[in-house]
Picture 1 (cartoon, one colour):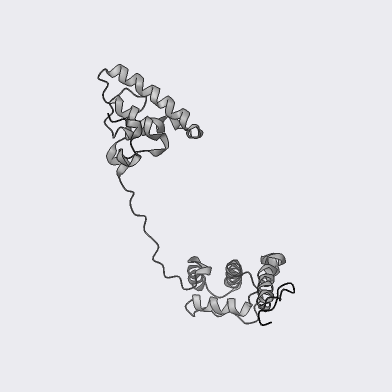
Picture 2 (picture 1 turned 90 degrees about the vertical axis):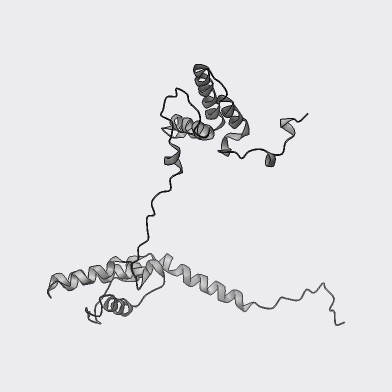
Length: 223
């Protein structure tokens, strides 16, 4: 006589929603065999209550009851016909794959500045020369310096930022080499600037200690 309890799980059907266990799945499959609709509906309500007790964390969501009834229908492979409080889910909707979002195909030359800096520069280049254009260029250059320091926490030379601005503008905007930007200390705290430098010193110090000290309690093999 074959006993259900002695079967290996590999010999049983796969769990549809594993978090509820095999017994819940067996109970739901048994619902399909109940011919009386009222008894079948009462049994479905009873199983949903057990599912809620087995997974109390599901009650943290506002629509937890709706979720449990959806899981009930999914485990029954959408064959269950009962008078539940919610409309049963549609198999084609649940199984449908979402539309591909797609990826940006923008060619960003220097990723740490992002995509919008070149667009800003193109718009600024359309403005006639004057104080407004100079103020916008200074603001953009300072933002570029912030972006650079977020990517690399070490000090950056202002001339590098101005040179990158010239390149990102399509070599259309030239700022004076005497232009003063925000200091590194104004953008990020000094403690954060010192961290990568301290890490380099520790690494260099560690590399200097390459030889192990001999153990005086251990006899020399040569002797």
